[in-house]
Image (cartoon, rainbow, N blue to C red; front, side, top):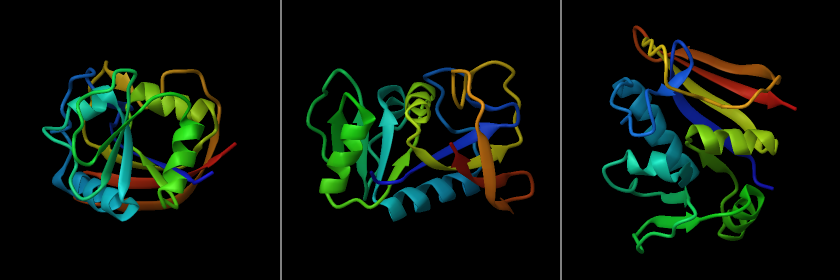
Length: 166
């Protein structure tokens, strides 16, 4: 199985969005640069359909793997998938990918974590408080993490990278 890294931006109170249609224009330009560079380095990004819909168009120069039960029109650079994440990861491996990047949202993050498929988490903590909204995960978990990196990316935002311990 190829290793999976989850990449997300979070408010200080652990929210990744106010709702499923919330465009990620609340994150810093430095967070966007981290996201763009990391997803290009991976050559691909997996996401749920609601997350995909928050982008104005598919992310260029990488494979957009979109989990959905409803196959959409053929779009260049987009691979529509459904079913078990393990099978999707195996297919990505046969396509030559050595690692996979997971970009949310809440339901897909939760599914991958339930199946113990997330190896690392890259999280940008932004200086925002939403109060209510979508959390990084939606089920009850009790996992430990090992800090791999902590770095300030601008005056108010931090990037943290963790290894997930199962």
